[in-house]
View 1 (cartoon, rainbow, N blue to C red):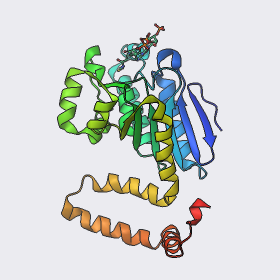
View 2: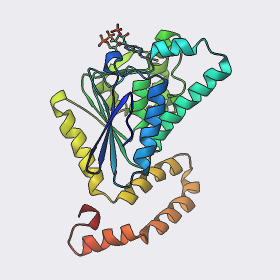
View 3: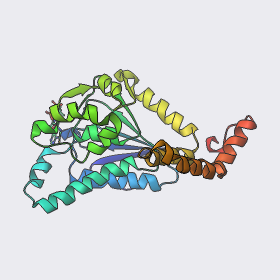
View 4: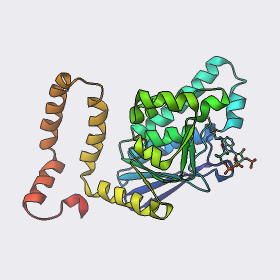
Length: 261
Ligand code: COA
């Protein structure tokens, strides 16, 4: 497995753990982290043995967002170079959001700026109740630009108005209430709750999980009418796949499906 400077990767059977590993700066991300996260998620997508990716961080906080020292250096570059760098970062979030394997995030401490962006980019986010989130960019004189589509997909434009404009911090319970995370739990329940979601994902058909993820992306922008040809074709194609045949046969045969073997 590739060795990274800013990430720790561990494989536990079908589960790949990706840990941000810059605890001395609260897992703030610089250009190396951006490159490495993009690479790590592409590698997880390509690895047939990996069925679920768990994203977390080492140290006190999940992530303090973009590395502000790195941002300051970037500010001295010409605008065109800045745009290339920002696009590269946007593609890192996209690599997570579009990863063909489901991504679960284990979030604690702080998830500020791009840390909130990472939370929004994953499929299932679980955090501690006292974890602090925030689109704090305006407090630094910037805006949460590249993460905005990911965050707005989760919380909607209405809630984004308050949070983007004020930069206020909010806790895990509020993050759960507004749909940024799926569950906010007491710290001692964090690992068990992540494990529960991972177990649910592993019990489902691997191709079906990947297809469900694509389905959401394909259907979200469509009207109810325009969705009909897309969704009917989708299920017609899926019903005859080997995995679906196995799923039906296993249920009717009162036995576990072979992907659990
Ligand atoms: N970029 C670069 N360095 C950062 C950082 C960031 N986003 N966030 C934290 N650090 C560094 C601090 O400068 C400090 O470095 P030092 O030890 O050399 O002084 C170290 O990480 C620890 O941070 P500290 O503030 O002492 O830890 P804390 O646990 O008390 O607070 C945070 C943690 C995350 C609440 C606080 O560091 C913070 O508010 N960071 C900025 C978050 C932010 O606004 N992100 C949006 C970026 S667009």
